[in-house]
Amino acid sequence: MSTCLITGGAGFLGSHLCEALLVRGNRVLCVDNLETGSLENISHIRDENFVYLNIDITQPFYIDEKVDFVYHLASPASPIDYLRLPLHTLKVGAYGTHNALGLAKFKRARFLIASTSEVYGDPEIHPQPESYWGNVNPIGPRGVYDEAKRYAEALTMAYRRQQGVDTAIVRIFNTYGPRMRPHDGRAVPTFLRQALQDQPVTVFGDGSQTRSFCYVDDLIAGIIALAESDYGDPVNIGNPNEMSLLEMARTIIEVTESRSEIVFEPLPVDDPKVRQPDITLAKQVLGWEPKIDLYEGLKKTLELSGVERLAR
Ligand code: NAD
Image (cartoon, rainbow, N blue to C red; front, side, top):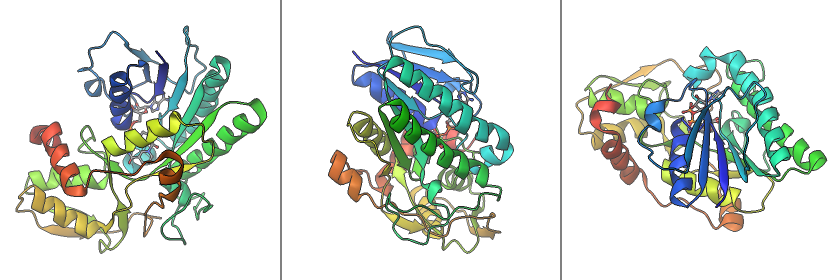
C-alpha cells in the first residue's frame, strides 16, 4: 500500500483526489489549514486509511510515517481568494512549496505540484503547448498567483536537478465539478448559482474571452496518471473543448432551465483573452485524454452537489 500526502486535501480538487486515491487502495494523509478549503468537503470520507492533519504548510512540518507520494495542491486558487490573500498566496507558493519538496526529499517520495495554465498569462500562442514560456504581468494584481506558480515550478526543477528529488509538474486548466464554492468567483459556480436563483448571469467584458472547462473526474485521472509515471517535465491537463464565456453562460441557463438574463460587467485587470490546452503530450506520455463532455459534466455537478448547495 502506498502512502500519499496531499497538501490542500480539503479543497475542491484535493478532496476529489483524496477519494480517488483511497479507492485505488492507498493510505491518504490530507494536510490542510482550511484557509479556502472546508471540512465539509471531506467529512463524508469514512476510511481507516484516511487521516486529516491540520497543518499550515508555510511553516516547517514533519510527518512521522513513510510517505511515497506528495501531491502538492495547497494554494488559494480563485481570483477572489488570491486577490484577498496576496501575501499568503506568494508565501504558500514559496515557503509552502519548499516545505513540501523538503518533505518529499527526506521521505524519498515522488512529488507532484499542481501548477496552472495561468503560468502562460495572456498567451500569444493558441492552443498553449508546454513549450510556451508565457506572457505574464508580474506586477498586476494577478501576478501574486501567476508568479507564485512560476516560482514553484522553478523550485521544483531545482530540487529535481540539484537535489535528485523525483518530481512532476501538472499545469491544470479550468476545472469544474461538485464542491466548488458558490461564491468563489469562478465562472461555473457563479453562473450556476445565479441561474438556479433566476438572477442575472454576470459575464465579464463582452463574453468573447474563451476558456476550456474540464470535469473534475477527468482531471484527477490525469493527475494520478502523471504522478504514477516517471515523467519530469510539465504536462498540461485540461479539456481542449474551448468556448466563449458567453456560450458557457447560455449553456448553464439551458441546463438549469433558468429564466435568468445575461448581463455584462467590466473585464477584470489582465483577464486572459483565450485559454485552451494543447494535450498532445498528455496523450503521448500518459495515454490520457478527457472523457466527460460539458453537458454530462454540468449534469453530474448539479446532481452530486444538490441545487441547494449550489444556490446557497
Ligand atoms: P481550493 O481553494 O479549493 O483548494 C486549495 C486548498 O489549499 C484549500 O483546501 C486550502 O485550505 C488549502 N491551503 C491554502 N493555503 C494553505 C496552507 N498554507 N497550508 C495548508 N493548506 C492550505 O482550490 P482548488 O481549486 O482545489 O485548487 C487546488 C490546486 O490546483 C491549487 O494549487 C490551484 O492553484 C490548482 N489549480 C486549480 C485549478 C481549478 O480550476 N480548480 C486550475 C489551475 C490550477
